[in-house]
Image (cartoon, rainbow, N blue to C red; front, side, top):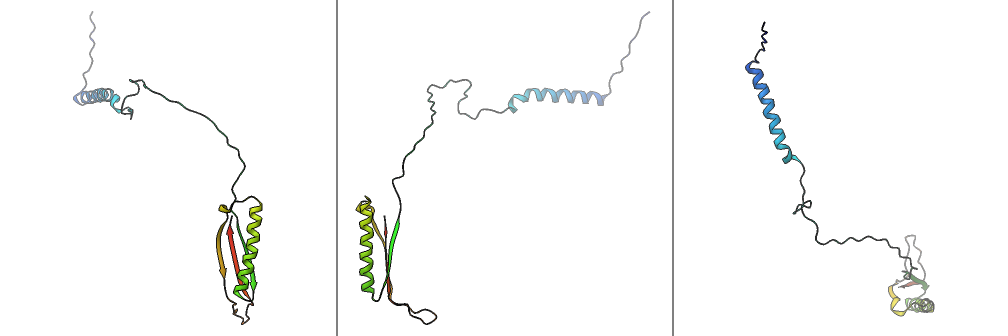
Length: 140
């Protein structure tokens, strides 16, 4: 007794579907290496070894006392005349400069900054401010 096994053959639509899947898998497998990320170096670092290498690491701390200060010093005087106000402002500023020098500040580090002088003024209420103010400022 012989047994016959009959397997139905797939139709044309099924054969095209299977062939399409097979071709897609083949193309995906062959294209995969070209889709991976590549090195951005001019020379492939995996195939070459560096000829010269310098590696440096370190930590440092610096602690020091401040040796510079920026001071703006001035005097303001009011006198009846501009000449008297200027003279008294000069005397007062000379004393300030002498005190700075006594602290050890060099002449080159003491610089004139501003000088202002103005005549007596009348306020909006009609009163006059007596005297002439003069001010001198120095930077040390």
